[in-house]
Length: 183
Image (cartoon, rainbow, N blue to C red; front, side, top):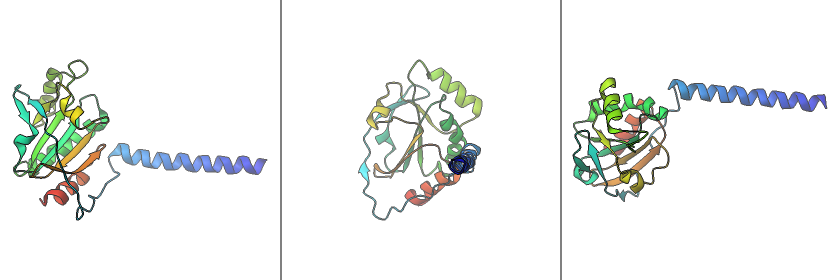
């Protein structure tokens, strides 16, 4: 009986150490770093159109972005994983913003997330990437967004080439950009 207890506690300790290791890496931003997948046999599908609103209240459609690749990121100010990646999106926007459209779509529901709250957050953090408000949740509905952050990579022809659920570090985001858009 004592031997079974010992084996149980050793196994439990090993699981705790493994969980702590991966938890630390995830929370510290050290991992996981995901290499972009092979796209040689990609079956891109047409990206359904949606309308969101810029910070001045003007309607903007995804289809307005045709002709350049688009990175669409669904996020909210109350989402900690979303916040952890915004600096990486800012860096990529500064690096690739001339050749790639970035649509940072905030899940603006009018109660938990308001346009005023988003504007104050963006201004206080000095973000320069374009922020769009999904005030009717139409974009989220169109893409069945059930978990954020969610990032879509859409080619210049308006086809979704990849989507990624979860927060990304800068290396992973740049890997996706260079793989899918050849930048």
